[in-house]
Amino acid sequence: MKRLLGLMASLFLVGGLPGPAAAQSADLAPDVLVKNVTNEVLDIVRKDKDIQNGNTKKAIDLVETKVLPYFNFNRMTALAVGKDWRQASPAQQKQLADEFHTLLVRTYSKALTEYRSQTISFKPLKAQAGDTDVTVRSQINQPGAKAIDLDYSLEKGDKGWKVYDIAVGGVSLITNYRSEFAQQISQGGVDGLIKRLQAKNKSGEASVPNKQAP
Amino acid sequence: MTFAKCRLATLVAAAALTLTLGGCATSGNPKDPIEGFNRAVFAFNEGLDTAIIRPVAVGYDKVMPSPVRTGVSNFFGNIADLAIALNNLLQGKVPEAASDAGRFLMNTTVGILGVFDVASTVGLEKHDEDFGQTFGRWGVGPGAYVVVPFFGPRDVRDTVGLVLDVKADPVAHLNNIANRNTLLAVRIISDRADLLPADKVIEEAALDKYSYIRDAYLQRRRSKVYDGNPPHEADE
Image 1 (cartoon, each protein chain N blue to C red):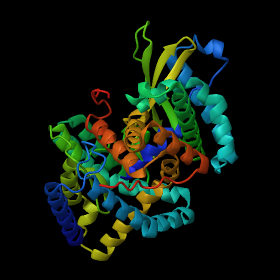
Image 2 (image 1 turned 135 degrees about the vertical axis):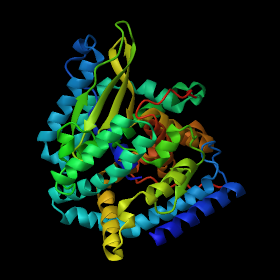
Image 3 (image 1 turned 60 degrees about the vertical axis):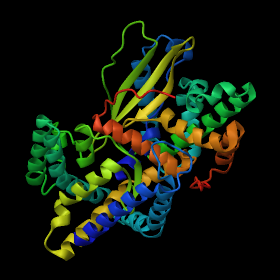
Image 4 (image 1 turned 45 degrees about the horizontal axis):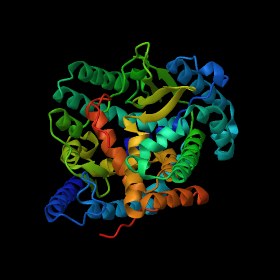
């Protein structure tokens, strides 16, 4: 349990992919992109005592400006919702993507406020020249504990490389949320899921253990 | 050790009993056939954590200076390297087992009883193995998800592994009962304190804490059995 939870935190701990102007990023190799962004974000967090002391608002700003432009939320939401995505109306799809976006920003920012002094090392990128779907592998090093694998899955679109999944210690963000979303949808349909996400984002509530009737 | 043994035997028996009775499965997740039972135990564990373990860990975290906290973590981590070496050996990973043994030797001597993790600085990486992973490596499938009282999430394979992990735990075998209990308690608190940052993130991230932890656990164990390179599972 202990290791697992530590990994869960790390799921959101390390920075996303900000970087220079969007036009330039379209030409950057995905591993360079991830590396630049990660270093930039961690640099900022290292110097910012407010964030380290728990100033979530500052962390959220950091994540929104530097990290999220490089995430493909539509794709991530579609993957997490799974087969029900196609049945959802465009309005529902938009709502889902927006709420998921908010959820991820808040969680990511929370994790950044827990950053202490970990370092990131990157593994060589294993990809062919024409690949449009790659995995950038890195690891989080922390003293006294085993390094944690952190893998980014990126897709090349017309706006350049975008992240559509992150896996920490083998736990894929999309796969984890897919289970949770499926559970919510089976109970209350797509609208039920939207409502649940909205409620969670609005109140910033602690998640309540779901008591299901047999 | 007797207390822990009794408790474990009871749990495994209880789990086995409930598995045969079927429990009240709820969301129909094929990996979690005894979900009703698991949610109940999860709630119990959460209650225990909220009432006792977490507050003590928070206090420990506040009071202990960071280098001391790290030293304590390293001390227990060093002891754990012995069982990790054993499991690597059982899995046929001889170089890794040799490295773990080397870590233990170096940290115990140069690192002063494991308080300083000098082995990591010379490139002897810390591994993470246990009997559940060894069984997995030998081809045993995970079986149903089980939440074990006090210990938390497991699957059937890892619950059996847990029994062996406890048997192989040097701290649990200390002859002096008072010392053993003190060390066990300190280790529990130290480990729990290491997880406090994770609490906040999980509260933020999870729609339903129980299923979030379950799904992460199952994914994580699969990845660990394959040492970070699990084969792709069919999607959807």
